[in-house]
Length: 282
Ligand code: DGL
Image 1 (cartoon, helix red, strand yellow):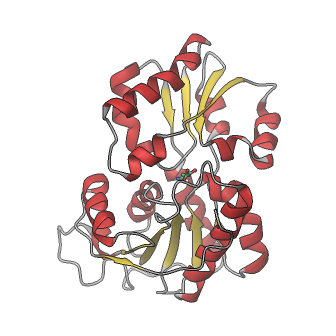
Image 2: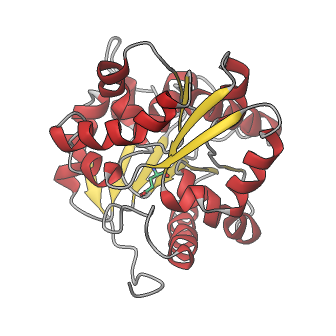
Image 3: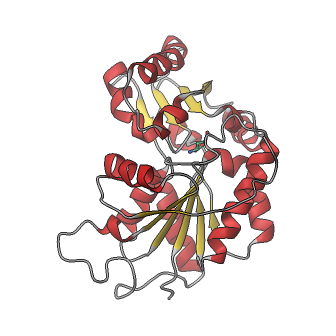
């Protein structure tokens, strides 16, 4: 049993969609969220940068006393999680586009995958795709530009709609009935996607599966907090438990606070932390 926090890391705000599910499943855990918004998006940065920065961010979380880490970013998982696992002796959970649940959900056996260019170009993704290609046809589209809009708090503006339409059109034309949201920022676009395509595709988001995997790992390592520890302790009945998480960003804390309120409907204090220098100049 451990009251230490669980570190949740993303290039920016996307990991909040994972934090939301972790908090729902594990309300007694204390969470420490780190958004590397100073360097977001990672999706079109050099892969060596993504790897090195992911390691730096996870080392920072470990130094804060985290008992386990969630790399809540598909791009950082694809390019950096192996290095993190080699360096840090902690349970580490990553995220990957939900191709397997999509194959199970699809009737037409045509699945659309929306992810960053770096995720789609990774060896890890190529292996996953290859393992399922005999069961399904995948139409993959890089969602370039979407993460930057979401970082600005724009989840339904004209640029977002136009970009989504461009990405979704080839999937629909190919007969896709299932859409993998292969970037943790994209669940925040779910309502806009629904407005654009109605019920024509089932949306697959892996946040819940990641939270369950974390729960299993904590149990395996005897690290779960008990009901009296951290998390909800001291929160009045009816208060939103997400408010007890610590929210850190390498960019503007006030912006993270506003975005946590807009995206998660919580009023949380946020702080700016310095994790410098960046490993490779851009
Ligand atoms: N949330 C990250 C992911 O899941 C976004 C990557 C980016 O910063 O471009 O891939």
